[in-house]
Amino acid sequence: MYPDNYRYTKEHEWVHVEAGAGTVGITDHAQHELGDIVYVELPKLGAKVEQGKAFAVVESVKAASDIYAPVTGEVIAINEALTNAPETLNADPHVGGWIAKIKLSVPEEVDRLLSPSDYQAYLGAE
Image 1: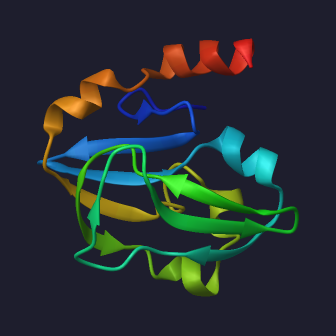
Image 2: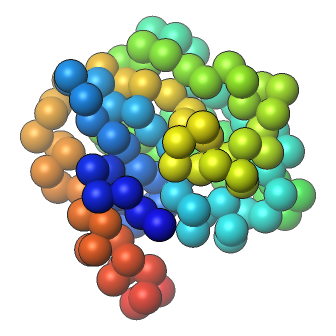
């Protein structure tokens, strides 16, 4: 359920790093907790984001939730498809439901994130 080549945060975001950039989204657990997602406020292209700071917002029928950057860097791509189909976060949170791509400015931050097994253990302890 949680891809082996992704890293996770305790706030339920994931990052998949390739070639110095991290694709970021919310976990399957997060989308289940949120319920039906109806709106996504994407970050701006070129925005500077900081690990652990809010950089996007997801609204569901239950509540609005900040999405926190798992890494520090610059937003180099956003998933504009979520504007018209925010429910993609519910249907495909780990692939089609990515939120943004961030060019890493502090690559070693990724090493401090949770592995898939650590994240699953964390979920079991919640």
